[in-house]
Length: 153
Image 1 (cartoon, one colour):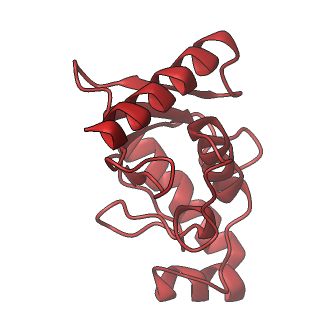
Image 2 (tube, rainbow, N blue to C red; image 1 turned 30 degrees about the vertical axis):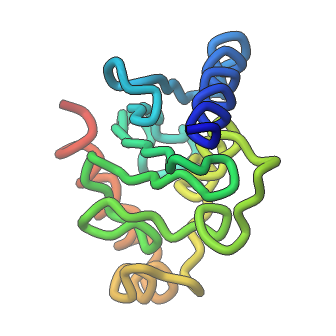
């Protein structure tokens, strides 16, 4: 029980900090009464093919947060080498590079910068990574089309 209490205390503190000082172009908070289950929105960065899109993201905190990373997934379809069709995100700080010093605010900012600067060398979707490396214009126009289709509802 103690662990859960610690986790929810920490999550509530992060929520307070987020509301006080929200990260640029992101917002996040509990989806309902459950503080362990959040919903976030990320605005597509203006210097990326995702510009103008609004992307919904779900965040699930584990009961032993912050010692284990949150599970973060896109609910909006996105054409990106590091985000697959289930919305899973390939981002080192959500896996082996996680540290209890990190916050959801930092995670959201990292996801924003991943939208601007994909990492094709550690892809979750190899075909998209290949397109990114070999035909960047096609990658950008496809990403733009998907953004208009799925993220501008």
